[in-house]
Image (cartoon, rainbow, N blue to C red; front, side, top):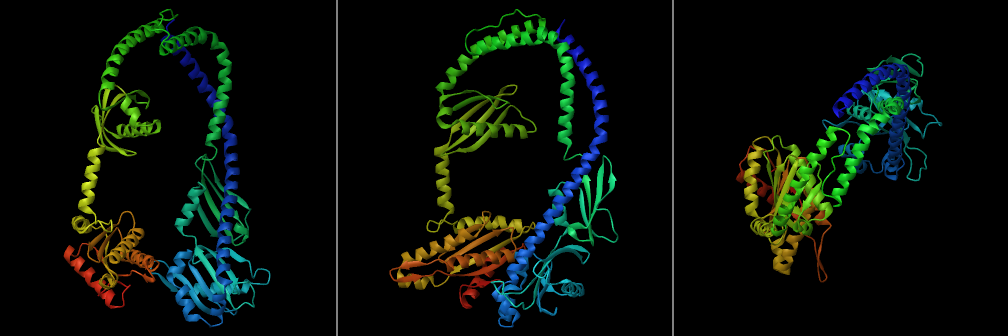
Length: 595
C-alpha cells in the first residue's frame, strides 16, 4: 500500500467521523451557550456600574478639593471675588478639569459665580435647566447627604455626573458659606469608549418610568443579547439598556471544549489505527529523521534505502542527490565568501541563518543580526512583486552604516551582501551639518530655513497650517557693550536652548541672524503657537547667566504669524518682524500677533 492511498482512506474516515460528532456536539452546546452568555452579560453590567460609580467618586473628590479651600471660602465672603474669578472661573479651568459645570452658590441657592461651559464657543453660561437643577438639588440636600451628594442624572436629555459639596475652609471646617456644584456630561464619545472597553455593542442610559425587574432580558438569540437593568447606580429613576455581541467572551472556551471532546473521541480511533500508523508512517519517519540527524552531525554522508514504502525510498534517494549537490556548492561558496571584504549571509524565508562570513560576525551581534533579518523579511513581505533583488540603503547598526543587496538565489532562500559605508556617511553628515546648522546655537541656519520656507509655503497653499514665531532677543547689544561678546554669545545659547526645549520634534528652530531667531511650527494654529511662545518665555524667566556678582536674565520679544497660504514668504517674515518689534516697544518679554 502506498502512503498516498493510505492517507486518502484515513482522511475520508476521520472527516466522516468528525462531521457526525461535530453535529451532536453542537446540538448539545447550543442549549447551554446562551445561558452562559446571559450570565456573562449580567457580570458586564455590574462592571459598567462599578466603573461609573468610580467616575462619580473621582468627580466628588475633585469637587471636595475645590469646595474645601481657603480661597473659595474667602471668595464666598466677598473678600477676593475679582481675583478668584479671573484666576479660577475661566474656560481653561473647565478644560483642564474636564468638567462641564463649575458653579458656586450661596446657601439659599443664589448663584455666586460660574456656570455651564460651552466647549465649542468656549463660553461660560447659565440656562433655565441649570437653575431648575440647582433648586431641585438643594431641596434634596440634608444632613445625611450634605457631604456625600454625588450621582448620575439625565440633564438636558444627556447622562450627567454631578457632585455637590459645601464651601468650607481647607481644614474642612465651617460654617459652610455656600455650595459648589461640579459636573460633566457623558458624551456619545464617552459612551462609545465605555462600550468598546467592555466589548459591548451599545449602551443607553434612560429614564425609568415604571417599576421593572432588576435585570430584564429584551432579546436573547445567537445574533444579539439586549437587556435592561432598573435601579441603575442605586437610582430608581434611572435604567440602563445594553446590547451585547454574542459569543465574544466564551468563544475561546467553547472552541477549546469542542477540541477536547474531539481529542477524546479520536483517542478511541487512535487505538485502532495505531498499528497501521506505526508500521507505515512512524517507524519509517523516525528512521529517516534519525539518519538525517546523523548526517547533520557528520556521522554519515548518505541515507539508506531500506524503507517499507516506495515513497520513503524515493524520498531518501532524492535527499541523497541533494546532499551531494549541497556539499559541492557549500565548499565553493564558503571559500569565496570568506575572501571578500563584503558582509555575506544566507537565510531562508523562516528567518533562519544558514551561513554568515567572518565580517558579519565582526559587525553584528546575534540580536542585531536577528533585527536585520526581521527588517528584510518585512520588506520582502510588503513587496507586491519581488523580482529577485532588493536593496536597503543607509542601514544603521550602532556606529556603522551599511548598504545591503538581497538576492533570491533559490525559492525562499536569500543571499545578503553588505557594504560598509560608515566613512562615506560620516563625511556626508559632517558636510550637511556644516551647511545647515548655526555653529554657535546648534540650531538650523538662515540658508536652511529659507529652503524650508519654500516647501512650507507650497504646503500651506495646499491647505496645511503653520505658524511662524519671530523671536528677537531683548537688550543683546547692551549686554555685549556692558559684559562683552562672550556673554552675549552665552545669552544666544540660552535662548536657543529654551527654543529647543519648548518646540516639538516636527517643528523647526533656526537662527535668522544676529539676535533674531525664527521658529516654524508644523500643523499648528495661532492658539497653540501662542502657548509654545509662552513656554519659551517662561523657560527664559527661569534661566540666568551668572557673571561674578551679576546675574543676567535673558528675555525675548516674539511676533506670531499664521502661514495660511494667503501671503508670500517675504510678507510673512516682514509682518512677524514688525510684530516682534512692537512687542519690544510694549515693554519687552511680550508676544504679539496683531499690529
